[in-house]
Length: 127
Image (cartoon, rainbow, N blue to C red; front, side):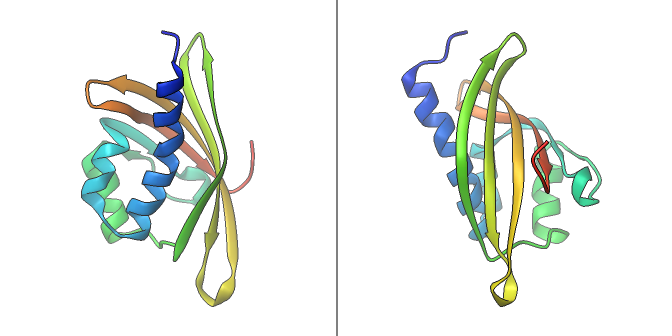
């Protein structure tokens, strides 16, 4: 599948939508980010693998220690033999003015409802 310019625009909006959903603590909006069977790999941060959208929402609501604000940057999309990949960085404002960064590596799929993250790996540093 060749992605179109409209696909790229929708894909470029996913990181911002994700950051806003987290910052607003609006867990139902994660339905517009992830597939129902999504895998979220936060093991680099010492967090167990999250499997399925219900588990991702539960983690975000009950266990996650969220920064105050997420700012997404360095967003780009690649197509390959294995599908479509979305890459971006996060700059997160912590408490007391501290900043943190992380890298996101997403495998995204096109669903009837639009583009969604099927597998996400987050690292504290670039691979």
